[in-house]
Length: 109
Image (cartoon, rainbow, N blue to C red; front, top):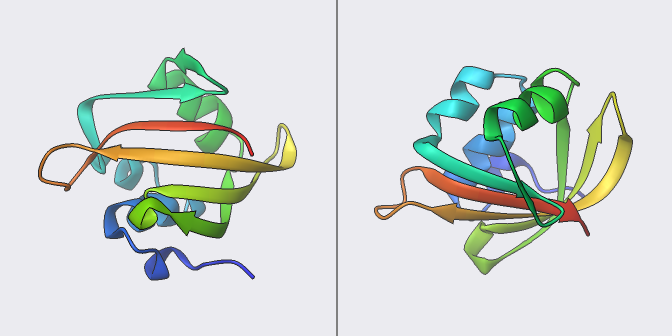
């Protein structure tokens, strides 16, 4: 059973998942700090290139299966047009004050 984005414990992470699923790149970027970073399978990537290739240019969709760390760590069945569906782990670091995400890390779960 999946967890709806609005039901996630961390509202910022929930809003980011909702933005991915709505294919709303502007809303996604508004949830990140200006200097946000990310990694995929342990390798740092260019955030803007990665989100275009893996999320917004490929019909990305997140079905959250479980959460931990107050909603900042997720296990997700992630689907896009390039790779199909894969079980992935996501971890989000929020900037001081908690209103925006400063880093996210994803990879195979």
